[in-house]
Length: 196
Figure (cartoon, rainbow, N blue to C red):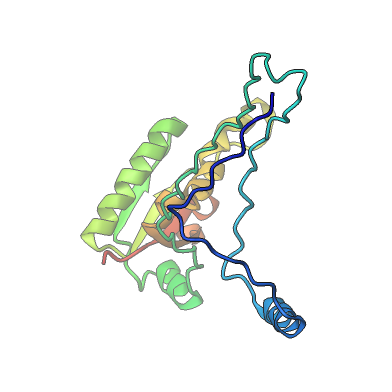
């Protein structure tokens, strides 16, 4: 039994394809070589076609493997710019050590735990910043050196690290070890950032 010939679709207008001449083909190739894409797009994944095998034609169709669509992550919100720390100038440092520049406020962290000292220091600097203070003195204590109590200088080591953190840098311009008259190694001059 012969299959009937397919009926042509007469509703669509017939189009005859015209072959390009050699001159047109050469022109097209030269233009195509000069064109650069606007953006490089990743190639779309091609669907896997199921081969038509006469032996398996009547068998149940195997499902086409589908790759899961990966979601596009939104770009993270830009972090606010945190200004860098700057050293206190020689002139200001000399004025502070000689008492010609007033220290606007003092904070003594002696005897506090690290957690409490961190909280108190941050609140103190926020107040100093909002009050428009310029220079404050933060007393950490020198701590005892050597022996079994070598961990007693923890705040002396930690406070400079805290002042370098982004949340503190928005409040602090810079800091330096204080003059011996203000506590020396156990204290820091801190220049407070002006409120805008």
